[in-house]
Image (cartoon, rainbow, N blue to C red; front, side):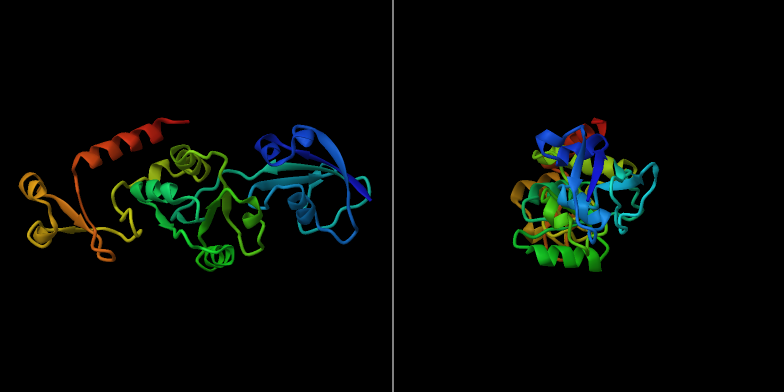
Length: 234
């Protein structure tokens, strides 16, 4: 059996060159669901939203009939009231940027795909990755396949995709381990400070999980500038 498929807008980024921005036919078996067929063409279920079959709303779990005409639209930008992410092994710098912006981001450089998918599902975390096959796992309900390779551009992608600009709370999480920071007096962490830091700074924050100490030095100003640049990008 055959059916025709049309992918709308950015979904064409997932298609091979000869199928981009075109209506094309594919052959399929009677037992294959619409979701399976869409993913077999390279588009994860996290990336598509509304589906029309012969002009009517379609259910991705259903099967197609001969000569059905299918139109697939991108997923709408999601709004997360309490955004929580998990990132694959290749996105360490993105994890740092998102933590800097105040977002809860699990990251390790030794996550296995099975663990990423399990934790994302069990903890209702959004999976961020550039591996589209990982996003096709059944346990993944919310995820995003990043288009850029540059970490700052990826951060802006995430902010736009999940409407996060109004939720930015900089410098609330540890950049190393993701734990919420706590205010701490200078006296409590005095022995951990360098000599010049002891002289010039009075306000400090401390991570109770990894014992990292933060203060508003020159790095703070650079991060503020970076946040302003990210927020100004479309």
